[in-house]
Image (cartoon, rainbow, N blue to C red; front, side, top):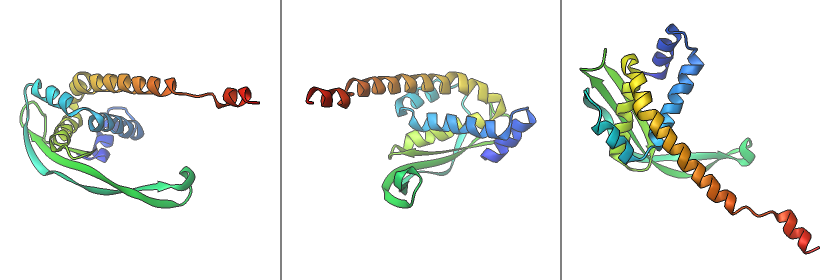
Length: 170
C-alpha cells in the first residue's frame, strides 16, 4: 500500500491527505530509528502473526548523501551512506486484506529493515493500525524521546559561555 493509497483511505475516514502522509512519515522515522532488539521483541510478542512474504530484500547498498551550502545554497555531494531496504507483503489473519510494507534504514542490519517493513505493513491495515500505534510506535517514540533528552542534557553540560570567558580577559 502506497502513501497515496493510505492518504486516500484516510481522506475517506475524515483525515486530510497531508495529515495521513505526516503520520506515516512519523511512524516510519520511529521504526527506522528503533533499536533492532526492540523491534524483534515487539514482533516476538505479536499474536496472531500474518504470513510474511519478501517482495524485495532485505538488501544493503549505498546512497549518495547530498547537502547544501548554508542550508539553502548550491548542492554538493557530501558522501555515501550505507542503507538497508526491505519490502514485504503481509497476508492472512488478522489482516482484512493483503498489505505491503517498506523500510529504508541507515546501516546494514537486514533483520531491522525487514521487521520495520512488517510493522509498516501492519500500520497500513486499518484494522491493525491502532494496535500497532499503541503497542509498538508509542513505546518506541517514548524511548527515543528519553534517549534524545539524555543526549541533549549531555551536550548542554558542555556548553561554554564565550562572552564571559572574553570578559574575564579584558
